Length: 40
Image: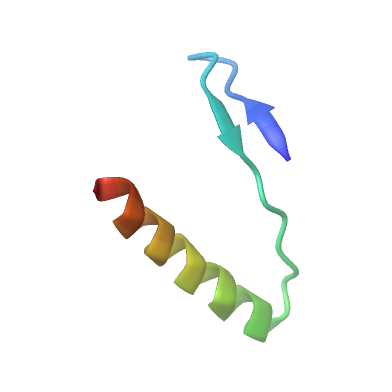
């Protein structure tokens, strides 16, 4: 989903993840990977 932050009007992506433990672990891994990519 494309969302816009109300305070800064910045656009960002929103991903909704299932709450099952295996999905949560995958989501955390994905977040860590994307955080590293964003640094470069």
